[in-house]
Image (cartoon, rainbow over all chains, first blue to last red; front, side):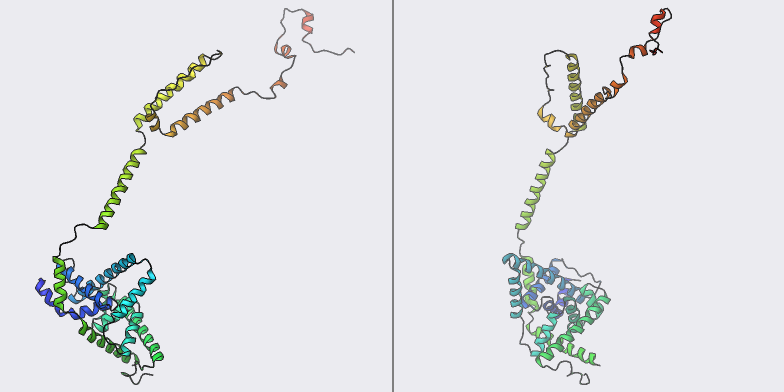
Length: 186
Length: 185
């Protein structure tokens, strides 16, 4: 694939790529942008090459996921080197995350994001790829680098846990979650 | 039915999130151009961690080489030469001591002339073997000259009579001396 053609495709997928990078970076916008930039750099330098084994979107998302993991590790190490106290580091990371939370969220959206953050990484990824990026389970499995059975398990468990978390919050905050779209649900 | 409704709700929440993300997403061209600028930037020639790692590796290799040179065992040829030299001196020493046995003057014993460095190269195991051999020789000599503590009980004053035979040309009185003493009735 020529670089101009690839660039056009990347531009088309840019918004979805940013959303996925945000999810991989725990919704840290600055870090997501940095990761996306690194991914484009890898493509420009030929370090990441699309072989055509899967769809471009699946390949790109896998590269983003891997780059985000590497960047996260690097950032963690750098922070550890600067401050020897791991607890302080975790606090600082949490502050960074909350500061870069993005947009003015509705109450339900806020609880939803909190519930998403409380999920294990694999489950969060599976839900994001299926619901946010509209990928099939097979494509999600390709991006995550796991078998389709494993991806399905992460997806089902993630959905169940998300439901439970939101239901708990509903009890705590008095939000009528899950009944607006389905009045027959008890 | 409930799960379908919940799934729709989750999907709605995700689409809401996606819309919000699209609004805050940086422009593609900006990110792309920054990546291009980064790719054109020359790489840093000196990498500190790489230099430190290389230095440590060189130090480790140097230490290893020095240690291996110091602790290298002697070659078989030189070791056998040294062993034969020592064995020769040992034999000469024992011969000299046997020759001068009984004389009052103690033999002046000259140490074998072996350079210190060569002696250091001899593995200590050889010295141990020599010591073991000497001890075995001493034990063998001790066993050869061993006498039973009850051997004195086997000897008596009449041993001469028992061990000698009467001759035919001896007279009767002399022959009687071989007979046991009889009590007079």
